[in-house]
Image (cartoon, rainbow, N blue to C red):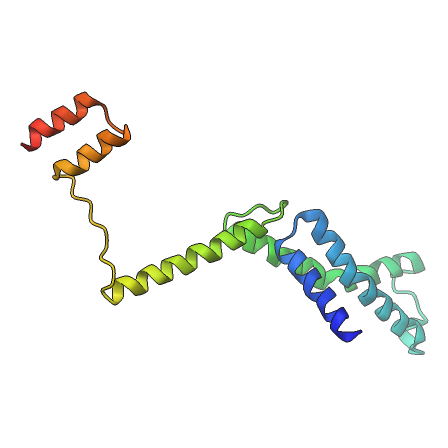
Length: 157
């Protein structure tokens, strides 16, 4: 049962990290409801003096205040999720699993390329705009017109 519970917690944590807004709300509820119920049970079962009096003079307000106090970690968690997403230019409302995967791939490719360059296995590509082959390649791809290619060829030759 413990392994299943850990996998459920990991899935909920991944949903909060990558999921859309509605999915994150359900994941927070998955964590919040048991957390709140245990806290409420502890307060009820405690025979402490402070639990007998009413903070606001109204038991409903006390219950709402207690719910807010137990929700603070989840509010801060959502704040950190939003801060991360804004920092990386990701959507706050959509599922971003594909974008995160692409970011990881891009970082890995950049590290591998840097390692290849540092070890001398690959040379940095240097574009020589003074080479007629560069301009011919652009003409072949359709990036420049024949007139532009001819003008550049006359200039270089």
